[in-house]
Image (tube, rainbow over all chains, first blue to last red; front, top):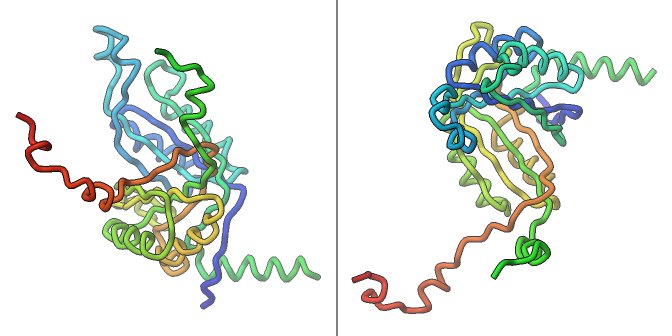
Length: 125
Length: 130
C-alpha cells in the first residue's frame, strides 16, 4: 500500500467553549449535522468573573473546550447546529469561533483512496 | 517612567510561525515529542490530553488522546508536517489526525543555556537567602 501523504485543504477548526457537562450534547448535535469527530479538553474560565461580584456564582467556572475539524462546505451547518445545541444565545453559556486551517491530514481508508483515484482518472478523460 | 507604544512594540520582536497540532491515541504522544526534538528544529511543543470521538467508531465511544501543539518557523513547516505525518503513522491507522494553522505573531522562545548559568560560579551562600 502506498504511504503517499494525502493533504486535505479547505478545512476549518470550530472551537467551542461551554460550561462543564454540556460538551456531550454539543458533540452529538455536531455529529448529527455531519461532523466526523471531536475532541474535548478541560479548562477554567477567568477574567470577567472577578468583576461580577456575587453574581459570579451563576457562571460556571469549569469549562469544556470542544474542537471539531470540518470541511468548508460543512462549516456553516455544523456551526449553526452547535450554536443551537449549546444555547450560545443565552449569556454565560459559552463562546465559539472558526479558525481557517492551512491544511490537514487524517487516515483515509483504501476504499476511499481507490474511489478518489478512479474519480481522478475519469476526470482525465 | 512609562513606555510609549512604539517602544513596547520594539521590545516584542514577534515573527510569523506555524502551529501544527496532532491528535493521537494516549500513550504515544511522549515518544513523538522526543523524536520531533531529535529530528527537527521546532520552536516549542506543548503536550496535553483530551477525550475524543471519531466517525469510524459507530458506538460513539470516547477515547483518551494525546494532543501535541508544535510551534515551528514558516520555513520548516512543510518538513515538520511531513515528519509528524510519518511519526503519527497517519497513513496506517485510524483515530489520529493532524492540522496546521498560520500564526501571524509569535514571540521568540529560548531557554537559558546551562553553560551561561554555570559559568558565573555563584557561591551557594549567595543563592540561599537568609
